[in-house]
Length: 468
Image 1 (cartoon, rainbow, N blue to C red):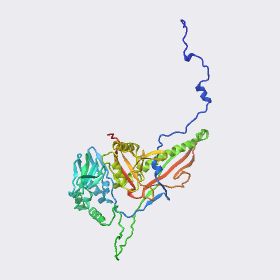
Image 2 (cartoon, one colour; image 1 turned 60 degrees about the vertical axis):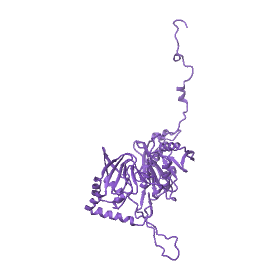
Image 3 (cartoon, one colour; image 1 turned 135 degrees about the vertical axis):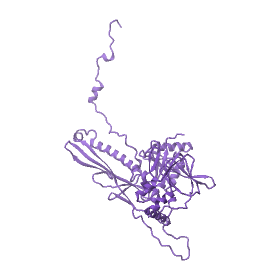
Image 4 (tube, rainbow, N blue to C red; image 1 turned 90 degrees about the horizontal axis):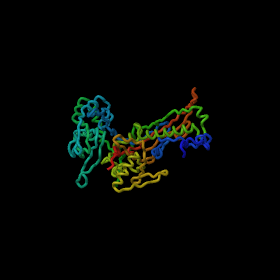
């Protein structure tokens, strides 16, 4: 290169061919349909048997049962002070359906807060039951004597549970197990003596307790249902018992819930921009997908019919060591016949896998719609990201028996509604307004029903963040 000669860069050279930016103006672009990250597998909607209902209501008729009033007690925490909500005392079987709010408020005020350290005995086997314990926070083990004289854990109680409530109806009751704190526990204690003092001034409470004491005298089976008198194994000519099957006079009715939205599309978009994909169809498709995601969320979490809130108290279990061990899964399955499926958050399924690996176990898998689904004891464990995970990294695992024929859990819908595009899901044209915007009403009707209590079980407070 001679002195004074300019160095020409790539940008200085003249263009010798058509550039790609200009060429794209003449090219046809290949496009994908609109994508949506919210779409999940929705195994609950796919595996739940759907029953068509008429009139938007499904009534579950059952045998007459006296086992009512069991549930969870809710508390209010202010700093380090915990108080029970007076209305929640109705969850105790002895106070079920009691209506005097003033009396319940006085009983709530008489509850005494106590703290128990891990390993501390709260109540001892064989001792008199003189207090009702309301567990505000922590885990309590029910310890009994095993077949060979050693201690055996009969069950685990957690937040919202209660024990010792039979003291309110039986003054001679004794503890049939030892209650021992597995973790640090905050407990509210309601002495039976205080309840008796309130009952002395309240005729309504005294009469109510007498009525509740009469209920156990009814002949019932182990499920609390009125017993059917039968004779078996007899000979000769004895008198055959007479009987009848009594029904619940106030059966529960499930009304279809609703999820709706109004989809708006401008006529200019619908008229001019429909190639290669129809804008209206894509807008409706994505809206329906979001509606189905909300539908599954409601089936799991709704306070009226959601699976987590409709599980009976005696079908709720606590993991013995916090993590979802094979022993906990076995106990969950043993609570019902013919469990068809388990539902768990994907992170809970990972925790189950870790616990199985610790024991050298490899779960079997099945093929479900081209997906490999893990199983336990032959029962598939389907992922469901609608099951909540708490900030403390705990979650729940749901076990279900499904179908009307098996007295299980069923989904409810009403097919044949106007402008239906899927069973119980409609897209209804609402007209065009003065701003040239087309409106469509997108509606889904749904609910779920538990035909008998043992069709649904939940393993609660499962720890998913423990790695060792």
